[in-house]
Length: 164
Image 1 (cartoon, rainbow, N blue to C red):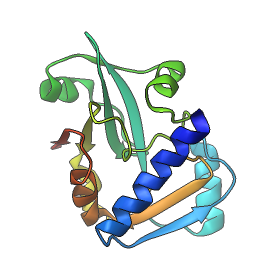
Image 2: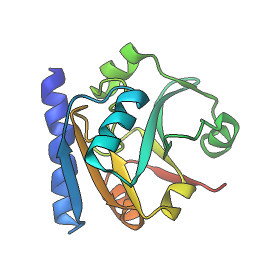
Image 3: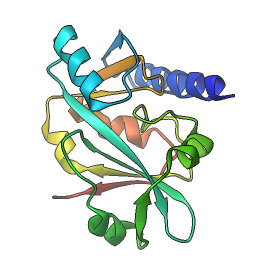
Image 4: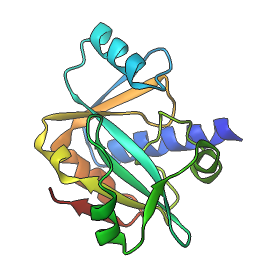
């Protein structure tokens, strides 16, 4: 079941990128499920793009959201609460896998169930290029940061931008 979910997430990413004519690069490598491996792979492959980080959140009272930021930033739960009107906490690995099928360390902002709200840290858009994992921890995609809003807008998810 999880393999089917990961394939669906990957297929959704590639179809959207191609439909929107967004140029991207794709790499296959050993699975990246932590930042140490991410940095090792990035060095070996010569990546210069900004590494994104997707935090899967549980909303108080029910529901989920995803916070998309860069790998060095932390969750600003007060700012997220101001946007959503609910307190948030980081989901357990089991809850996340059950809700979206992604493995820890490889959560993707594209291909989520449509009821999952996506909150984007606006400073991501100030970078030239972004890296993210399209569901499979052994794959990485890059795209121009300026294309991120168009890519997210093509999903059915509610999207909010968090200004810093």
